Image (cartoon, rainbow, N blue to C red; front, side, top):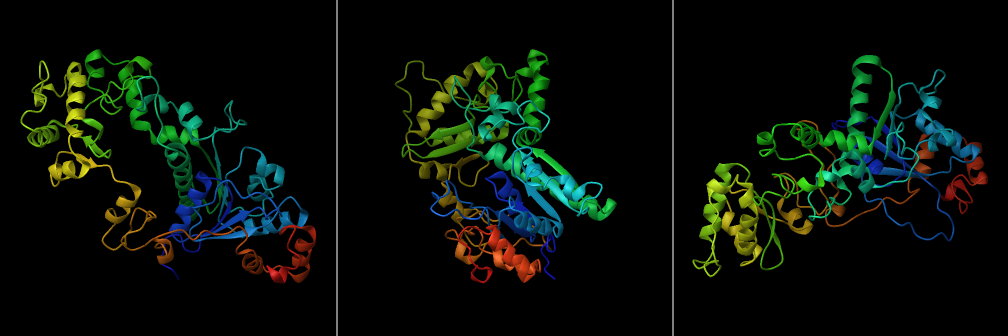
Length: 422
């Protein structure tokens, strides 16, 4: 038997976008058998807007549960599974006849099932039936109001925070916790309810709790805080929100960037020593009232605008490679901002080959994840919708009559004429 941690766990993942597939990817990378349920292809339909780049180590069955034979087969598939991942808006699975009660209710057919539901808004909230995306979820979470950006509005970190961290990762965590509880305590499955607003809030516990605490704290405490309250007038005036000049990103002469994160005085001191030494002797000497940062000025917020201007002007004198060498091997907490391609060649474990595709993480000493296939290390090998339909139906031991019924009903797609040609 495989020594991958989740070997023997069967997952049915209904095809969705971003967070659901990422939850499934985490499970598949650690050895689970993840079967993606796709819609059968529609003849002459326009190409999909997005492709599922998160289908590594997964198999796909293309089947329509809206026809009787398709529904019966999907239920049979779920009855053989340990986990179901539902990425749809509230009510969709119930309307399909695949809601939690079918499997976990009083007369449910698979009481061992971990039924994981992943939505944007809470199923009990006022927005539960509205459409939304990552940006909307972090907006409602309270986190967006704390993020850096411009002086007039906060910015957002692509769709990483809600879709993948607060959504897919938190959903996978819930699944693993439910599986652990099933194996060690009750022997029963349960519903895992996850939503991206709540997941983002939990993930952001530190800044949110601190923002609440410091908003009612004495002014002396607020002055030392990393985050203030969500008042627009206090945005980007704190340690970690783009206010502090020693925690930010600076543009170099070649248009590339350096990150600076020397929060602690001992690191700020090293940064200053190396930075100032690397500048020309006459740097800013021709500026009236020339100003030079020092260790005593680090905590003086009134000095921060001058300090930021000094750093900006200095970094713009030389290219990123120059500055990388200046800080190399030091505790200055100043690092180059790498492109994805650069990071793929530098950031990997000793026993992992460089790869454009991120390796699974974390690493376990005895129970490894499934390594990225060699053919994917420099590109992508996408799983096609329905690529494993015949294989999966054979595993379910459908009779010839049942297979013929699926074909005749169009459950496998309008263009499928015979099961044998799948």
